[in-house]
Length: 166
Image (cartoon, helix red, strand yellow):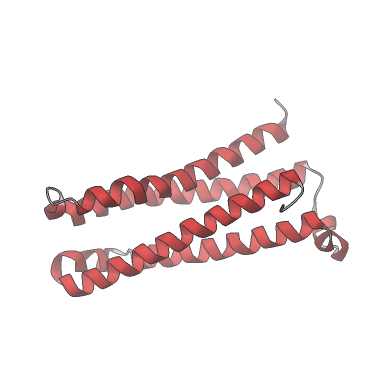
């Protein structure tokens, strides 16, 4: 296996972990925490699961950044190409620009979600049901936006390697 193949494999694995982890959290964990038999322990479980998922998510994002840069470099796209206007005017460069922009937005929104899901806000779930519900809705919305934008990034990644957006 070449270095490029290994880097692409790790990039796809990290993307699968990132998107799959969010999908699992949304489709399995959150509905389970809303079940009546678990509701009394939901905030404790959310803290524990969130702490574990936080590490998993940031490691996945870090791996995506490292392997993404490595993939470009191994494809022969270095600083010279990235600093040229012609590169960004080509189809590959335009799609890459969109992908990088959305990656930046996802990174910022993920950091915002981390701040929103702070221990202080998680404690609201137990202390103040009204404020806790407001926090829960904001966190849920932000998580959904991050998931949707992550799927946009995946689409743009496919467009990069397949050569089109069609």
